[in-house]
Length: 199
Image 1 (cartoon, rainbow, N blue to C red):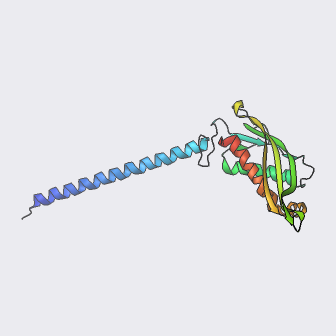
Image 2 (image 1 turned 120 degrees about the horizontal axis):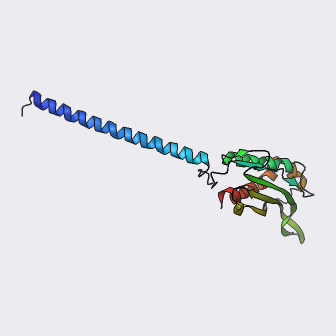
């Protein structure tokens, strides 16, 4: 088989055509990916959808959280400030809403209504009834107002608990910065899910 200059020219032109076609496909793919990323960023920023599962109306842009007062007589003194700040922090980390001092599009206020520490199970040891474990139960009453859609507003008591070994008393738990927070964090997650995740 012999090749002449014309054959080489045709082969070169065919290779060049394939290269141009591949370059065009790569460019189209790059543009499509870029547009998709821009669209996702826009939708997330507007609050229509975010990857953490929230379902917030685009008209909602701000949130205000009043101090959650501790009205439970046995609750530790730090509970008011810690719960309020943890609630604010959770919403700031998981939404794009701007935290404002008052009159937010979404508004939270409420109070801690119960802080109970009691035996969770009773065991018989040498014929004597003893606590097998102790349970800390916290209840928080929350009033949530959605100024953009009042049908989403609610007033509800959120409750959660944690069990502790029988040899731990309420004083040691109140002095443990992580013990109480374990329970309050679960309540904060429930409040978040009820108000903006629609779970």
